Image (tube, rainbow, N blue to C red; front, side, top):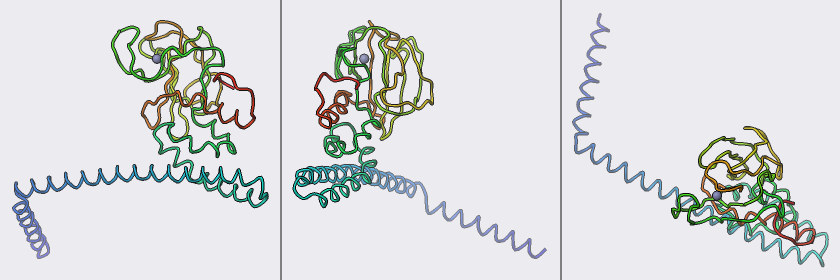
Length: 279
Ligand SMILES: [Zn+2]
């Protein structure tokens, strides 16, 4: 009985404390607290964003430095032999440990040039992110580039977020990098029948207005694998492929990716130079 009395008293005490707390944090207190929280949040966000910009800048600087050293090493190797080969291996390994973070962080293709020498030694990396044309050599012509244009149907001026490659209906469409089929959509509007592929390093590619689809959702595909055929489904005036590249969810200009692989391989094998296309 005594215990229950004590418990009741203790409970009452807590209640009293709560009442006190409410009085301390009155309307004014609550207002100051909200202002304080908003200011804190603002600083956290700005500090966080500032830091990621700084990280990108540092990553780019590091990669550029390695590029310079690799180039120097290539020139050196003709005279100093074994030692230079070991130094080059060390440089390549050092780049390899940083490359994943670097490729995820960059917003588009503008910093890829700092990897050119590295890619000559490790060209297989070019199969893992969009670095080719989705149609075969000589099978297409570019009918609309990425950027502001007048829409052929609505006549409105708006940004075109991809590249249009006009080609005869039935022309085979190739994946521009290895990856996984994210989605296959059959629509009568917009992109029409289209495929979206997930790639490494935050890349996605989209292939629109297709006639046929030869892959299914969740399927793993290799670079250059045939995924469908050119058509004119959806909002389209004639057979063409609408091709988009997304990097970290943002649509970017696919043009710099077209000759990336060819450029590296041409320099590697000193093969004949032609127009850009699937190897
Ligand atoms: Zn288009």
